Image (cartoon, rainbow, N blue to C red; front, top):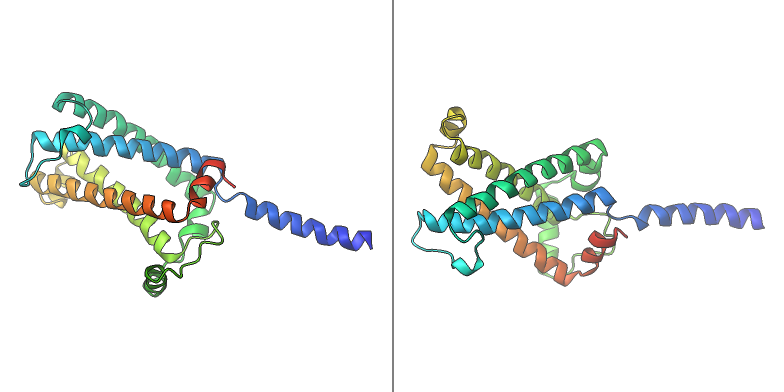
Length: 212
């Protein structure tokens, strides 16, 4: 009897251990570093935009970073390298550990529409935090695409002469400026939705801090 119970308890304990760790340590560390670097880049980028605004509005200086153009550029470049190195580590580890396949794939338009509709109705389940729904998958993949676009357009703005082909592919320097700004707007929208989802499902924040 004890043998049977022990054999049943071991699989149950093993299953519990597998479910317990929702976010491994490397995911949590790189996530928070990415978040910090992206926020620093956005705030300093707003100050840079104010110095050379190309739309009919300006961002309040009180919510920008850097104080003046030179200071904002220093913050921007420092955060850029932090985001580049940490983001590269994040992507490599996601691929190397198979997390990309487990968490973000497969992703289909049909699944996205179904989960998005369920989310609008308040029927989207968040019981298992180790599994991403299609809306989460699309949001995270979209955020990565936006970050890549920010890096590519940023290279054109930073070293336009050194990257002539990239500048041409993006439609020229002035178009690259707008692409960079609009990609930043998309990232800010992602931040807003991400924070709203955390407020609605606070367990996700605890998971990203504790991992369990």
